[in-house]
Image 1 (cartoon, rainbow, N blue to C red):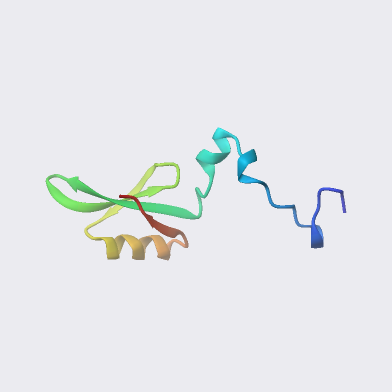
Image 2 (spheres, helix red, strand yellow):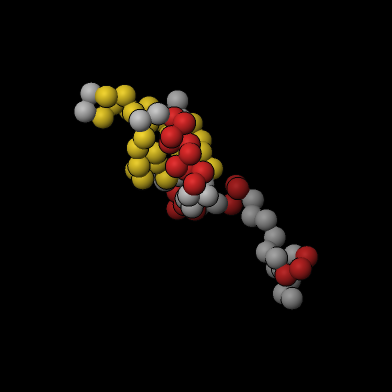
Length: 80
């Protein structure tokens, strides 16, 4: 075990203050998806975006958007 390893060989937690701009852009990328209301062809819908803002889907309502996010093992977050 190196001096950097924590108990059981795990890496110690990283302080969020130490994250670079690029690290922040990737933060939660695979774990978090956010939803927000949008208009699609004049119809109200819910957009689904990855943590970095990349559009990954849409749904007709928040309940279906959240269900899709959870089905893909991600955590839904609402953006106002």
